Length: 262
Image (cartoon, rainbow, N blue to C red; front, top):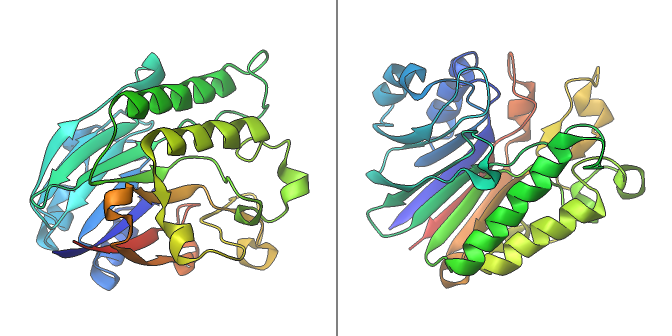
């Protein structure tokens, strides 16, 4: 069984329904994982998605905040959802395909503006969330699994436009990249995007604040596709659809793709 997968922080699935439809029509991933849906589950605009073959969904939602959804052309059943760090947020959902592959979709807290938990509660919540992820995967070794989502951390030097300038900026601080590394180690996760594209600058997010995001190109790779070692060799075809950042009324994130032959 071969299938394609995309992950995308959509920054409101209802507001940006037209570009979700555009992605489905033009790229047609078999599985589309969305974050920051900002919608109760029952108000996700499924009619248009159903018409394009995305007849399966597992999701967790909130009004106006957070929210994760997996839309699939392939049969999928929900298997679990965790509220890591006990925040009461809709930030994780997992579904299982008929071939036994479990797909985890995460929206890790952004962490606020100051990388200091003593003065910024949100940064502490982010670190606690990552610690709970680490402990969960250490206690429940994942197999035949894919983890995707907006993890809100750019871990490598070439995942940001300027490593030195961003070392004290939330999303690229050493404590965050260390915490993310511990999550990876706990689940023995393999970074599929960097397995396919091992070298070079690579971004999936560009700030709305930039007047010309494309020319300035001050990006960060915040969105990720990982897999467990037992299926990581089946992953291929990774790419980031940069053009989507320039679509009408865009998200500030671009979709990240990968395919799996299992």
